[in-house]
Length: 58
View 1 (spheres, one colour):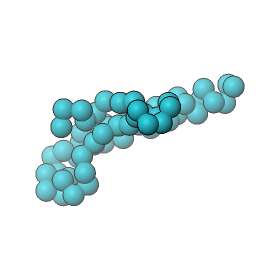
View 2: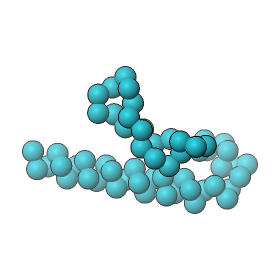
View 3: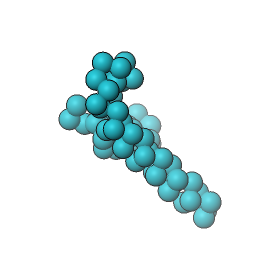
């Protein structure tokens, strides 16, 4: 998908960000996409870690 792999603001909730990625069922059909999903999950984890660090400073 063209929007996969990047954060997007969720318009209905202030400050909410989404990371679109592939559906798990799709990964069963095309396991070559697992690496891309892994990179997406690493980005999500880094963003959550950064957010936690910011919240601890407040």
